[in-house]
Each structure stands twice: as C-alpha cells, then as structure tokens.
Image 1 (cartoon, rainbow, N blue to C red):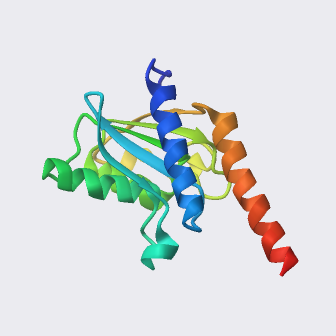
Image 2 (tube, rainbow, N blue to C red):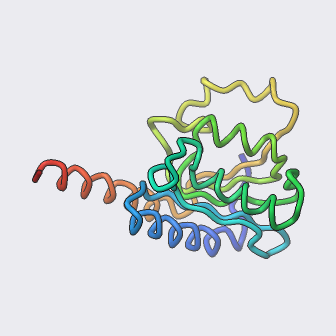
Image 3 (cartoon, one colour):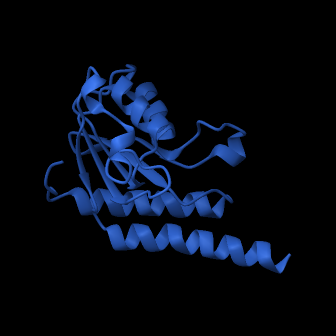
Length: 159
C-alpha cells in the first residue's frame, strides 16, 4: 500500500461522476478512470446489464478503452482510479495490463481482493506488482454505492 498523492482526489471525483452515469443507465454505481501522465486514456462504468456481459465491470471497460487509445494491451506507467475495491477478475485484468498504480475509494466487503479479503489473494504468485492506495474519498464512494443499493431495495420492495 502507498500514500495518497495530490491529484488522487481530483481523479476519484471523476470516477464518482462516472459511477453516476452507471446509475443513470440502471447499472451498479461503480466508475473507473485510467490516467497516464495526467491525461485520461480510458474511462468506464459498470455496464454488465446493458452490454449483457458479466465482464463489463468499470475497471475492465476503462482498460479496454485505454488499450484502444494507446494501441497497446500493456498499460505501463498508468494509474487506475476506481470507486470500489476491485474484485479478483478486475485485479487480474490489471495485472495482465501491467498498470503501475491502483487507487480505490470504498472497501468491497463482499468481493474486494486487496484489503477486504486479502487472504484470498496471494500476490506473491503474480509476475507483476501493482502499488495501491485505498480509502481515497472513502466516505463519498461508500455513500454512493450504499445509496444505490438502498434505492434498489426500496424499488424492489414496492413492486
């Protein structure tokens, strides 16, 4: 784990805005933005429902877009900002992409693999190390996803 850097909150706010786009499309409120040298090269929000694709998580969508933008599947020297601690699938994609750094907002008590369930992932076995920082704008990110699921439960209950 590493410390928060000056621009982390700026980029996390952008990821939060992307998570709002997910909600407006009926998706789970998670957003991600991939940055290289201070420029956005990829962004995404959860799109599994609209794409009928179980792998269309925010992180994967941002990685896919970035690969097309820089015309390379290796996304070296990049930082990925995501509103929720990644699942094992997304973390695996980050390792394959060789991102340098990951910054996440809220902990993912159900499926997060870096902090919440770090025992489920032995990072020693991987051929690439990702530096990570967690808890950036944690309260905002946690409230956003908690609010999403609260509203979802209310809608389901009223049906």
